[in-house]
Amino acid sequence: RRKLSDGSKGLHHSGEKLLPQKRKINKSMRKRLEKARIERQAEETPRFFDKVLVDAECTHDGSIRHLSKYEDNGLWGKESFESRFLYDDDEGRTAPLDKLQQSLLLNGFRLLRPGGTLIYSTCSFCSSQNEMVVSWLVQQSPEVLQGFRATVENINLLENTPAVESTLLPGCVRFEPVKSHTSGLFVAKIRKV
Image 1 (tube, one colour):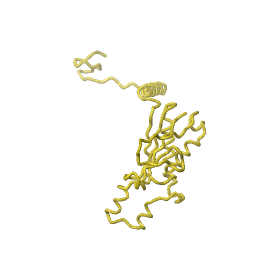
Image 2 (cartoon, helix red, strand yellow):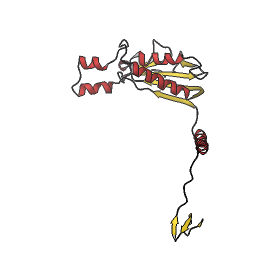
Image 3 (cartoon, one colour):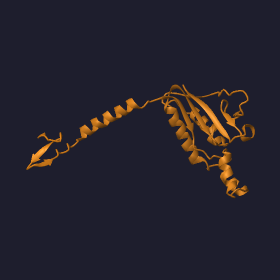
Image 4 (tube, one colour):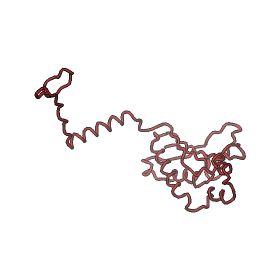
């Protein structure tokens, strides 16, 4: 082996440049490289956050813009409305979505540092997508929440804010279209203690 005129290292055989063989990586080297990659990634990525926002996937039944597109396209009517709008007593229709929302909320909570704040929001009117999801998190055992508890905190609203406190879960707020002149919105503030 000797240094070639282009600065690279290689082998010469009859004036022909041959590149050195790639070194085979054995199992132990692969483990060391993977461990080093994980350590580098851990140093670069914060493990916990002071604040986390979970704007969860929902049925959008509180979104006036979303609902109005059916009217604009001539798809509006009692049957159309009934098929798209979910009521809290629509048993089973929201089950897959409920599981997704619980998973998103739990993942967001696990990313919080102790004492951190999580905001959970949807644009749904259904309590099964709002208060019931937040209640589910609050009721989880410390084992599920990695030794912590989730508590709902009051949201301090500015004077004349067009929101009402939830009657189902104190501390949470709802922006209702009639009062707020906006789409519907649910917001909960959760602390990791």
